[in-house]
Image (cartoon, rainbow, N blue to C red; front, side, top):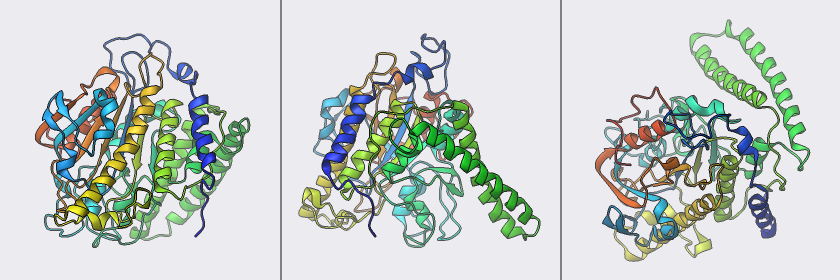
Length: 457
């Protein structure tokens, strides 16, 4: 099937250059509520003590990593990166390599095969998922738990991005629904937040369709049309409801929950009024190159953060079990097949190159964040918390303890980066709770299989 693409590399470069040139935006200044710019002890929602937006992003890479080349040498601040994480060296003072964090609900237990489905869906939910191809059930993911509290502060409560096509149905990994592998973010146990993989659609969702100068009015018209359609659908569904049996009524209730969520988003957009209209061209569509696709989706996340369109984002670089080849770095074999290397040195070396390639993409994104001044004079990276990791640890053995995880950023001055942070054997959910605290979430006492807060962060 043909799909829109960045056929001309200059188009993509022009767009990225335009993003950098036009987005020293004063809009953030005007969005911050009066009085927040003064530092103080009061915990604000998704806001630093200096009054800047505090942002959290969760980035997933597939199939684990080669442990010996991932984990640094040394400990604490006296560490050195090995090959896989070496692209992060220029910004090492903003990096915590998080050792000893587990997602034990992703282990097989009585469910047998399906480590890729579990690794993907448990990564941000920290709960045991139901093994079914049709009746899927996970849990609310940490990004949505935070968005439930702070999402009203921005035009979009959260942003879900992917470099894979969206899937919510069908059977994938040994009896598990495809919904588990292709969705990182979950609103509820049965309602994954469908991510967008087309950068053009992401951009138009954020800023409206058309050229610069047209987008605000186009966005208003689209909201009016959607509201009219939703009113019609809700009315029609309510008439149907009394004629349905119990099982169909449950299905309709789930559908109506999704409709109400869309309605709530429209109301939120209307409350914020006219959006920002960056003076840059709309991106074309999905690039053919996986590397370019990742680059442009990172730019979409950066653009959403920089315009304060949202403060919560997730990005699936590729689903766990992904078996695409990486010809752009000279590796024609499938990634997943290579991870089952059985200690073959050549296969290990190729997996390590893929691992490092993904980290290079992350490093470019973090470097961009670090180069942009926020409204308080710090960098955007300083005022962010970026989790990067995988739901499998050792892809050869399908392990889910001591996951390869990085926490980048300074959390607005509340984090202590620049070190290799060892945590013994601790639920990753403890880290997520600590991040939620910093985002100002007040009512999250437990999350998933958490045993407390991660204090040493």
